[in-house]
Image (tube, rainbow, N blue to C red; front, side, top):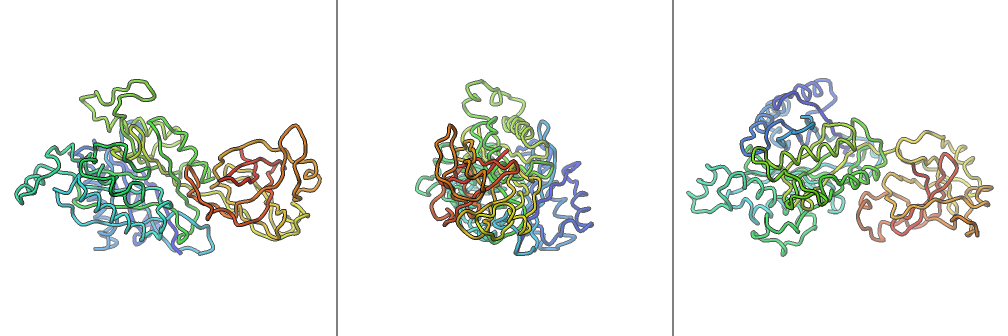
Length: 491
């Protein structure tokens, strides 16, 4: 069963592949398993940012030495611009085989390449449809059948140069623009709408050539597009969750409403239940708001004639996100046309989930002692939960409770009823006490990564089973998840 690995490797210059070479030499990375490499390079991120092509050339040389012509299948997505404190680095996405008994669903990675795009299609519906078709192929490669399970789509798209415009005109074609810098935004915007079309976020009849980089009410919450001079087609990488994959890694996404809106990012992190640290992977888009305001306060990113607003936005958002995750090797790409709301943008977080709860069977009335007899040992929490045991009330087995995926719609303090204080594991009717007390609870039989910040229909609800999650302190807390009450004690 496939399992995804993500390696973050610092670089000393755009052509520095020594870290990747060392990882391959040591066996930490198997070159034949590399699906894609993202990189942040210290260029200007504009048309003449050749740091991207420099990095691609160095990576291609290294990969060809190990893979031969198969190196052409690896998606290389270099994003120029490491303004502010953002650290240049590579993100290597690798697939390997793992025991099918591991955690699932898990992080899944799929890739696709599109044919070279005729210059006259750039920034138009031809590009939108080309990207949409590529995203669908990448989803299939990842084993993702439901678009709701996709959390981030990275597209490297082409731009126009004067030579490419002349070549199109020589064929009697007309390009959307002759402004090479403007072509970057048009290419990103059309690619983002292609992602939205493939994921069902926007219907095709709502799209047109005229809407691209004009109607910014149309946007994707999972698109990240970066344009560059170093390619003519598109390199597409889909990141999501799939039951066809296993492993400890999981991904969640959020949409920042503006450049300082980090609360949704924290919620996405909390939904995964893992601990933040050096291994946390962050992918984000950034753009200066066209209004010239952030929460009513004026910014000057659009008024700086010396430095592009995309460079300001990258630095600003990277700083905000670094304060959340605690490190600066963050992949923030500038220019967010149709990628999130104006001034905001999509963010994805990849980290290792907290361990799953053990499974077993016991008599409902024997409580935690019976769980211990079954081999469930107390342990310190690995994630944001104090959950130790799940005590069934009316069924004969312990349900797995991957609480890292549960996003509370409402949380309220809960005091165990006196009867439960004497016999944990017995369902109780409400008692007339000054504080709320337990009546009955339904426990989610499995986690669903589509719950965070999304709607959920009845088909993903637990079928049945009453459970009492118990924290290390022996207390219970009420969480309402998709209209179903469960109890767990959260930090």
